Length: 134
Image (cartoon, rainbow, N blue to C red; front, side):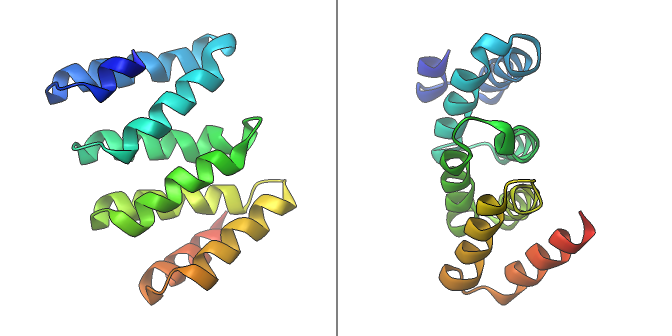
């Protein structure tokens, strides 16, 4: 399925694959990590903002509990830097969920990313607002 995400295809085709991978994450624990990695890679070149937002939402929810959460943070942060405002907002929300996770090193990593390396003041304000809300 990950291969098909990288190939040519329309919105409905890609949506069906994303839906299936999201189901794998929630229903089949053995496939969870592989499905998350496939979706992380897909958002790197995703031409459908609706799908990117859905995936980012899932990453914010599931990513902090993966064996290697910093991998997810890298993919999410790339969306903050490179995407449209809708996808960027979803990425900042997902990062905030990592920031409020019980893992202190994740919180520190996310705060460093957005305070040192990202210059957009509006995004920083939204992030810290979300951190306070969660």
